[in-house]
Image 1 (cartoon, rainbow, N blue to C red):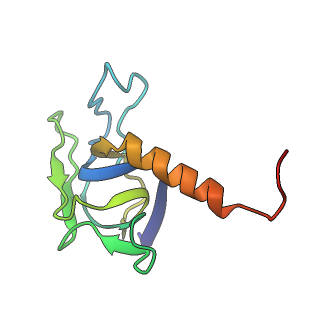
Image 2 (cartoon, rainbow, N blue to C red):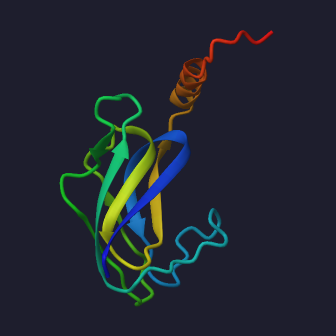
Length: 135
C-alpha cells in the first residue's frame, strides 16, 4: 500500500471533534446511516488529518492533531473506537486525510456552525462581484 491523500469537503462549516475508522462489515449507526457498512482493510491504520481553516486565509491548512491518529481495524465483531483530535477549534469545510491504506470507511464527528456557514456564504457571494449591477 502506498500513501494516500484523500480530500473530504463539507457543504457547511464544521468543527471536527473525532474520527473513526469502521471495522469490516460494521454498521456503527444503523438508525442514522442505514446503508453504511464498514469496508476498511483489516489492519492498523495511521492517519494524519489537516483542515482548511475558514477563518485564517494566511494558513490554508492546519493539523487537527499533534500526532498521527492510530486505528486498529479488526474483524472480531467488536465496535470500532473514535479517536479525538487535539485541535477541535478549526472552522472548516475541507479536510485532508493522509495515510497508508487501500480502503478506510471513515466517519467524521463534530458539530456544524450554521451561523458561520451563513456568514461565510454571504462573504463569498460579495467576493464574486463582477462589477455588473444586477437590476
